[in-house]
Length: 424
Image 1 (tube, rainbow, N blue to C red):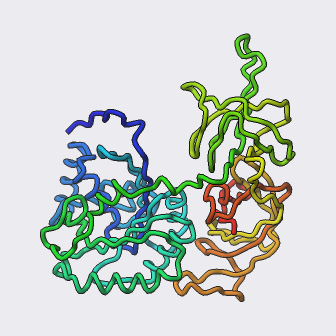
Image 2: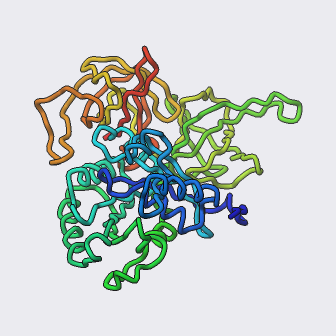
């Protein structure tokens, strides 16, 4: 099989989604099934996994081998690191993040899910909703993933029972009332045999909903971006200094919220100076209006000192500006969080340093309760902390804008990313 680039491929809408679930719930198999049934893998890849499956004495072709890239993953039959896969159908492009199920790899799931539009949470039909299901649902909620699809997998092992599916549906919905997720859907599937993944299942005629692929191709993600609050962190100042562009001074970056138009009044942070947008330029010419998440170069009418880390916003719609930040963090590092430690901070295009002021509480993800007594934040823990930065950050609450509400902490000694934060 050869894959020809589809006409208009670059202009197709992109959906990022992540898979989550307990160990052996079938995440990698499901992704393999999506790739196989949508004809997104090459013949030599298929031949290789068929050969490996036979060599291991497996009854079916092990589609999980398409995503398990590390040798330890293939040997143990588990996912350890985040594996990204790219494929496309005539309707959409997709980026899949296959994330691990083990508790000790929570940080990997946070990394893979941080940019996702949609999370697929797998539940084993035989065991129902377990602690890891609740843990992953909470992380999806914490990361403000707008859409969640609960796939009740391995329905072939419970004789395609509608009663089993309905019981799991009730279990999850009882828990989800505590979560902040706007859109939750349920699909009964068999990733191994392909029931309701790309093609409708003949074994579950009682299920009248859409297949998983139909949901992925058609779910509306246009409103996932914040189209109200205009935010443009400056990434780079462009000064060509050539004869044809002698006085050109443009501010390049990616729009992280809202829209900007030529002639619009804007405010520059942190200076507070106000000016007018002169032009919005791209490689393909100038635009009258640009929206998130486009990358553009903005020029303004007045000569104002603007540099990397500054932010251009609407005159009467400004973000929070503060050095005192309250946030939830997922700790990534083997060394625990230092209660009065100093760390480097990266927020949008702004770099700063910070000191941890207070560890307020740790989350018990399995019960969704706050542990106010245990202030030891170790790897994979999720906690609420407050920090003080060396210079003001321009931010929105994470639930309002994931781009301007996300922050990372870096160990200055080792340059390791030690935590991902969601500003409250």
